Length: 213
Image (cartoon, rainbow, N blue to C red; front, side, top):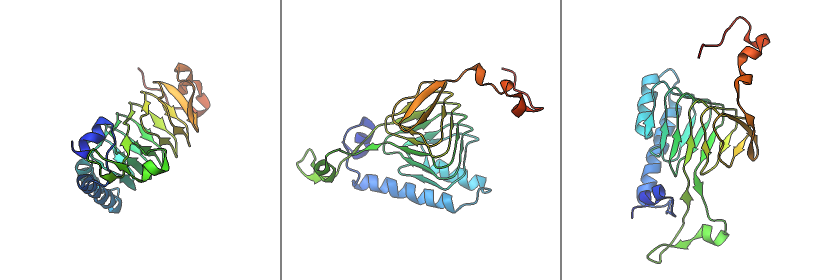
């Protein structure tokens, strides 16, 4: 079985495998080229992201700089905004839905290393050869979410539609839809409801209005 197939099965894989190293080098080069581009070069940037990612939805924008580990394991939906310093370590698949907004310094990680030091250094593969191993768990983010600055999303986490994740949160477990969650470790503070509408904040709403449902 190829190491890439092992990644997708969620079993131990060797990150030093030549095929995987070539995928990462391709991603790192495209990430660096994106970071050298100007944000006004929209066609160039879109072209780079379409080469880099498994899917990149229409209307999405990545401020930059960005860093993708594999790139080809990440899918980004439509009309998403990512502020400065996006890092996605997508050893396992990362799926991001539509209409999401992310503050600066978002980090999404999927790989997990063995806890025991000796096992982190080396283990034996199926042929008895010593190699370094890790494994990954997918991350899924739904639609219509807002993340504050400096959020870290850990391996295996699913965040439902309509969630708000507070600044500085370290998300270690799933967050159900329409939840406000924050903290380290991140926990659900309360559900989001109609009571959170801007119509209840006239001093902020001023002469603006809420779109009809």
